[in-house]
Image (tube, rainbow, N blue to C red; front, side, top):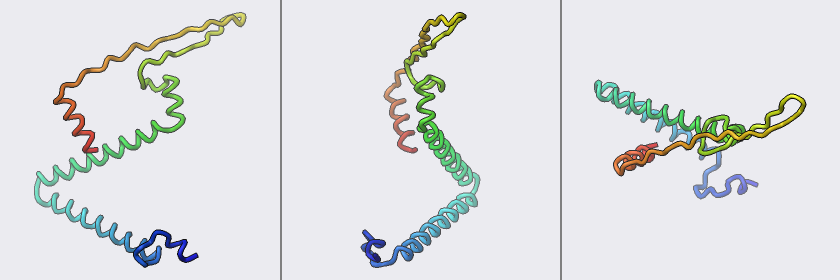
Length: 134
């Protein structure tokens, strides 16, 4: 039973001791990062601007992740497939129209094809570099 709780543990310490040690390492790392941030801010306008840029990039990355997560839900996938979100390529919206007296007709509304801009090699490199930074 004790061995099953420590499965894969090659260090010879208990799970709680390992968790406490790892938590202390994370607290030390957070404190070190805060100290570095404070030192950058104290170094002058350039350091403060760098910290602000890093914070903005961090917030943008978090927002992008949040949006990606929301767009990956089942409801979002269904809405996207139904064309409700206006995302995606060439999808036809099929409508069944019921008139007076129960007569029905079917209508297909095609969305215009979106033209993609061809990127220059410099733009492609810039886009790849931006993706790598995320």
